[in-house]
Amino acid sequence: DAKTTQPNSMESNEEEPVHLPCNHSTISGTDYIHWYRQLPSQGPEYVIHGLTSNVNNRMASLAIAEDRKSSTLILHRATLRDAAVYYCILRGLYNFNKFYFGSGTKLNVKP
Amino acid sequence: DTGVSQDPRHKITKRGQNVTFRCDPISEHNRLYWYRQTLGQGPEFLTYFQNEAQLEKSRLLSDRFSAERPKGSFSTLEIQRTEQGDSAMYLCASSLSEGSGTAETQYFGPGTRLLVL
Image (cartoon, rainbow over all chains, first blue to last red; front, side, top):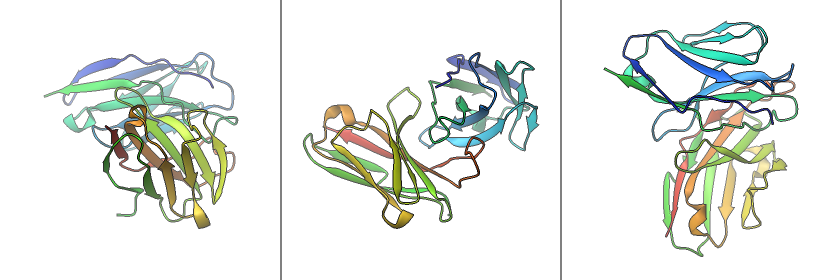
């Protein structure tokens, strides 16, 4: 399975933008980049996904490098509720039925 | 609430006992997944169903573990002769298949936290 590399933890101030990086140098052409987050004591929840182009939704934006070897999840204005572990996951044709979560990035948001 | 539900939310058992967990997926979802999560780690894939067929099992799923999805609706995960190493959060997720599946979203339940004494 193609793996991803994320920082163990990051810190942000409330109402400021947050950029969460993810490296995936072994990504294949058919792999989608998915981001999930897990709030304390909850199951993971979907945030956003993309293939090649940058993506926006009401929760976040996903910026994908031109060579697709890295991506960045952007939270435009962090709130205390955004404190969670964020997972960057690759999903391809040969592993579409399971996610490899890794350890993710624990985001701490300071008031 | 029309999300994925899991029951029980917490389970404490003694080593050697059998436990069974239930997952009710989102009603129209044909794919169902089980994951295990230990403290400080991300969830690890255990097994996957498409409708009632169990199509893949992880090497993590020892002979003491069995999962079923009769009639392609709810699913159960049973652990026989529990061991202390089985203590973890057991997560269920469901999805609606879309073509190759690479873009589809998995919706997770709140998990069942198991503690084996």
